[in-house]
Length: 305
Image 1 (cartoon, helix red, strand yellow):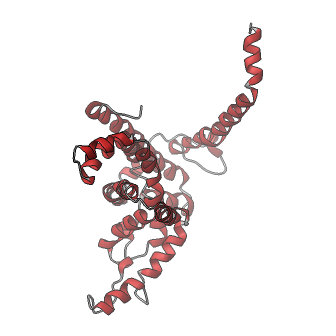
Image 2: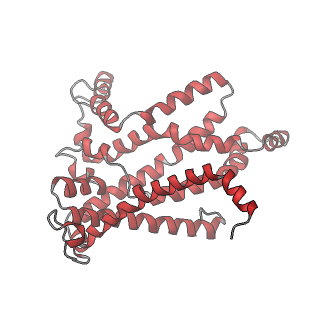
C-alpha cells in the first residue's frame, strides 16, 4: 500500500501527471494507432472488405515494387536529391551560424536572423510559384538577366532541362531551410566558454584557427546528432516541390518515392501497393539511423543512443 508521503507527493504532482497522461494518449492515438494501417502492405485491400477482412497476400506488393520498371528510377531520383541536400544543404546552416556568430553589431545581426528565418514559414506551394516565375522563359528574372548580359542568345527552359532539376530542388531547399536550421547551431555556439576564445587570442590564434580548433569541436556533438537524424530521412526529399515542379520534360528525374506513393495510392487507388512502398522507405530510414549511430559511436565515441 502507498504510504502518506507517497500519496502527498502524488497529490502535489497530479497536474503534471494529468498532462503526462494527455500526452501519452495523444501519442498513442495519433502516432501509434495509425500504424494499424501498415497491415495494408500485406493484404489485398478493398473498401468493401475493410482492413481486417481483406485477404493476406504476403510480400506480393513489395515484390511488385522491386520488379517494377519505376523502382530504380524513383530510388535513383530520391537518393540523388537527398545526397545533394546532404552535401550542400546540411553544411549550409553550420556555415551560416558561424558567420552570424562573428557579427558584432547586435541590431544588424537580429535583422539578418529575422530575414533568414522568414523563408521557413513560406509554404512550399508559394516557393514553387516564386521559382516558376523567376525561372520562366517568358519574362522570368533569371532569363531576362542572362539575355541582357549577353550570356545567352535565347531563354533557357530551366524546368524543362533534366540536368538542372536536381540543382533547382537543392537550391530551393537551402534557401528555405538554412536560416531556420541554423538556430540550433547558434544555440550550441553561444554555450561555448568565452574564456577559451580569450586564451586562444592570447596565444595568437586568428579567427579561422579559433573556428577550426574551438568552435567546430565544441559543437561537434550537435552536428553529429543532427547528421544521424538526417540520415534517417535520407529517403524524405520532399513532396510538394517535386510534385508541382514536375512536367512531361523533367518527369524522369523528378519522380521520388513520396510523389510515387501519392500517385499510386490516391490517384490510382492502389492503397496496399502504396503502403508497401511507404513501409520500404521507413525501414530503410530506420536502418540508416541505426547504422550511422553505430558508426559514430565506434569512430568518434559519440552517438544519439
